[in-house]
Length: 100
Image (cartoon, rainbow, N blue to C red; front, side, top):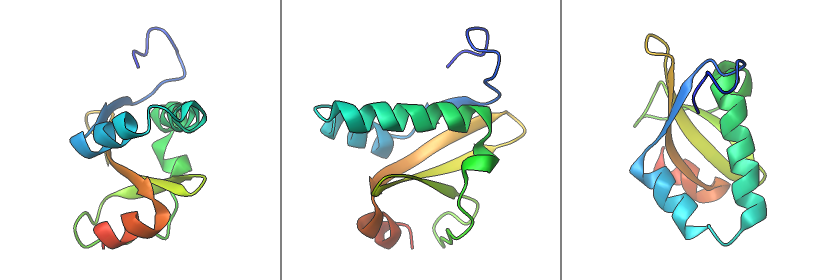
């Protein structure tokens, strides 16, 4: 999301392979994809405001999470580069087991 097209955007977003795979696997669910892209836009503006405080992960202790219905988006904020990396997306139950 280039910031010159939208002056609100503060952070550049990148998707990891796991997030891209999730989006590819759910490409037929247009409503879900639209909601996830809406959340991506919110994350690009202020990723700290969207973070839920209860996410604790031994695999990625600095990662944050946010929700989109029954799905969770796991992401990492690189403040010095003003980047947000979308690490993974998945159903609530399995994403917590995977990132414990």
